[in-house]
Amino acid sequence: EVIVKNKLLRLAELIQENFPENIIDAFKSSDKQSFAERLKIIGQARTIHQQRAETLWRKAGKKRTPAERYASSQAELAAFVFAYLTGDAKEYADSAMEALQALGRHGEIDLIKSLSKR
Image 1 (cartoon, rainbow, N blue to C red):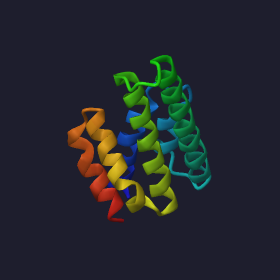
Image 2 (image 1 turned 90 degrees about the horizontal axis):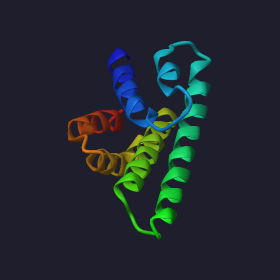
Image 3 (image 1 turned 135 degrees about the horizontal axis):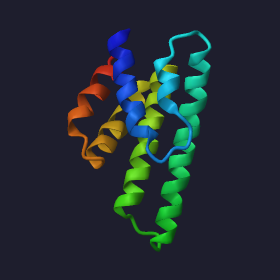
Image 4 (image 1 turned 120 degrees about the vertical axis):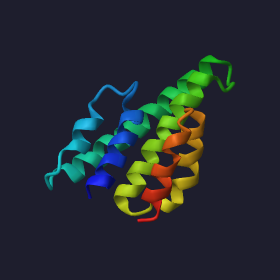
């Protein structure tokens, strides 16, 4: 439980950047109500990052840029965490590992592998 929580916290830290609400606090809490809050906030983060990626893509003349890839990768990680919380992590594992590679976070790929086995 603590190991899983720490892995989710690490992913939440990567998703947090450029998101206005505090995702990390939702993942630090261990009360029963926090599960719904985690789902809600991680879904919001995914949406915000997807929208930001699309805006950046359009501003760049519908071309991929490092900033757009970064935002897209954060959205993919948020999708993975949401899927993990709802029991579908395996479906999103490959895209989450690709997202970590795009973020230059090769060391965290093992987080995705171990969480997607559960």
